[in-house]
Length: 259
Image (cartoon, rainbow, N blue to C red; front, side, top):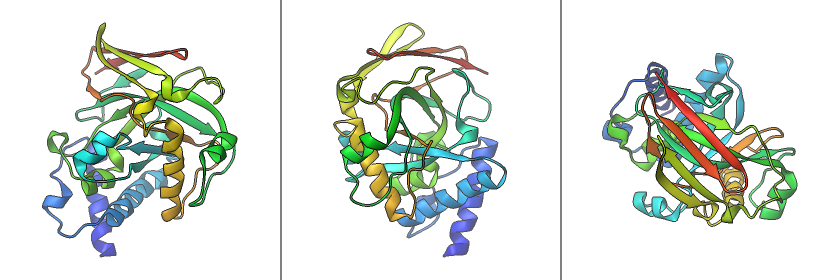
């Protein structure tokens, strides 16, 4: 099975780097499990790291109960964040992307290591250096942005790019579950939400992240970023679009979409 998973990782890597769609893995490979999918994800990410990309953090997905129910699971999923995925300024080029979507998130940045199955919210706060408004660009490599749980995990939970706002904040400055978010596309309000959409409170997403990483022998390391999950539904974007995401009390991110 190891050879098979390695060949699937090769296939995913080719489609990710070429920005070309592929058919769902689960339509072509029988019996793939969630653990297989995480191994495929790991093997795929190793290919990028072998070329010089660094692991800079983790992302959480399926952090709303409604999304979990829609795919028949009772826990979130996670993916890798690589240095090559981070935007240094709020401009998103469509180059290398297939059908990107944008969603607002709260990012945690850590000053100390977090690991183990029994981590608590208190442990998370103690380990957190700051929180930062963020935007994640998801871009499923599957046709029509359609996938099963196993498919999406293998595809690094659809993660493609991310951007952190310039201003960071003390983790104690806000009730993050009450931070309201308004997303505008070309001046029109398209999504609204609040931090409570992320497992009731974004800190719970980090707790789940650590527990899940522990199962795979990984941890949150000092300096790492965790994207805690979409606060609203993701929106499709196209060249020429301007997306403004306002985080109550925390400023705004203005994202420009280019060719």
